[in-house]
Amino acid sequence: MQIKRTDSGLLNSNMYLVEENGHAIVIDPCMDLSDAAQYTVDYLLLTHEHYDHISGVNEWKKETGAPLLCSSACAACIRNPRKNLSRYFDAFCRMQTWIPVEDLEIRQVSYSCEADQTFEDSLEFHWQGHTVTLLETPGHSPGSIVIGIDHTDYFTGDSLLEKDETGLRFPGSSMKSWESIGKQRIHSIPDGARIWPGHFEGFTKKERQQI
Image 1 (cartoon, helix red, strand yellow):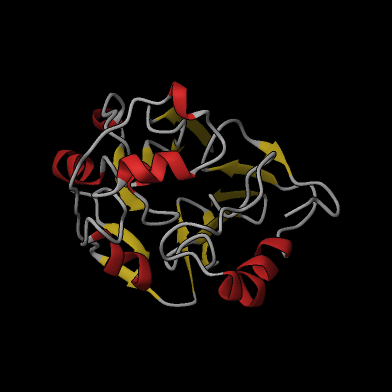
Image 2: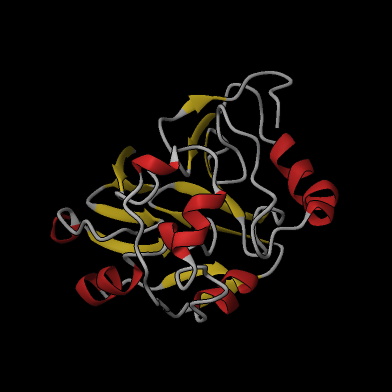
């Protein structure tokens, strides 16, 4: 299994292409379609609904015909430019803490897309000899999830970043949901697992890592 990370150009958010046997899963699609024709894309997955993580969904669906799979809460938000924060992306950029505001190119957009498949709480399926597990981790956003592959690689979106605390001050964020559900599930990721976060480089989860 090969994993390719692409910087979306929006707040250094990441798109991941997971490849095996000429088939691929694309996580948090961005506008970079350079790999779209090289693989049979079986799924598009979202770690959560914020615009910087969904900006290429419509283009990837059109180019590959792959279905979009996400949590039910995420599916409800990506339809609405206000709930996916694209309508307020300039303000969203100023609220985040991981990139200095003066380094940002602020964009005003109004974006929406549609899910083809949804789940609630958790979902597990087999893909090209691998076990893929989707688990809701609400807190940063209502639709946040973690995507695990074979219990060794985890795509955590903005629910686990290496050097930044989980953002809980955005519209739709919930400290209550994070403390009661999301944080506990992130803590359950085994030590030594490879973490592929929503922003910046991947890292290895360490014992008692600050979350």
